Image (cartoon, rainbow, N blue to C red; front, top):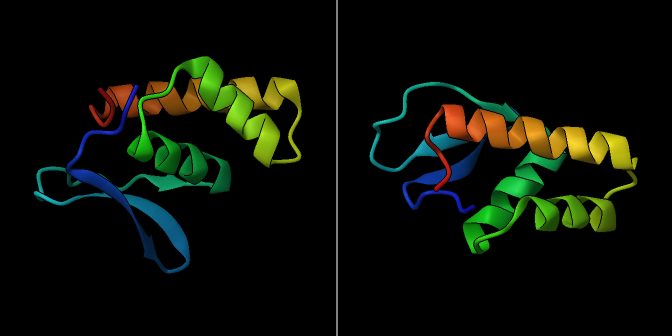
Length: 85
């Protein structure tokens, strides 16, 4: 999976939000720090669910259960909004 080129993270009022460079995306999605981390990871390279999970475990003090849940929720949200390929 990889974030589509037209999407990027932006800071607004201290929150991480997803924006579209071509203004086709008008929804507001706010990401917590773990989700923003995964988003940035998927902007850099194509990653599997397992790679996202391992990156969370390696970079955050987070339980296995919470990391799995965070990755699943992130993927579902990104697919529902057509943000990842």
